[in-house]
Image (cartoon, rainbow, N blue to C red):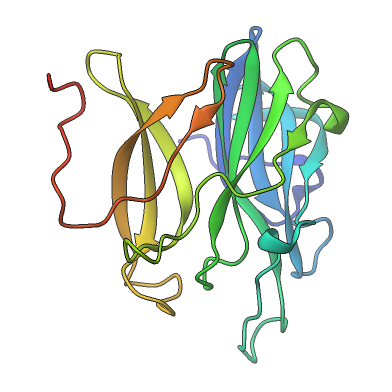
Length: 215
């Protein structure tokens, strides 16, 4: 037990995730700029080892596009509105880094996945290295009754040939981010340039091939 993982400036911080790049370990997370709730940004910092952050944090994403800014709370114990970028996870393929994150409030039906892209030759600590996709890369599907899909992670099939996304979502509108959410998984593909293609959230109740199972 190593105790608390302390982030630079020691501000409110959640959703920490590690990734290694060119023999350097990095931490990415969602946090506040200051000490007051109102907006969650994505930060990155270098790590000295898996339990110790070193140096300063760098902000690499803030909610700035319309689809990232659904966040009315209607809760007297919280601010009236909070903009959110959270849940960062990094993929690497084709000479590029892809940081997939969740945007908008999880309490809204518009919770969705966004993507930052960077060259593998760039400095991940430099905000200028990252380019934000103009539209969500994974979002609600009314036709499939999937709402607020987000907070993803990734895994590969046992045979190493398939890429899968794991996320949570709701079956109905207006269910928020409480006990109605359920975890879901589905395979995804890759474009020729290495960009992940997540497609549309699948409907619950349908059959999927077991990861790595011969088709």
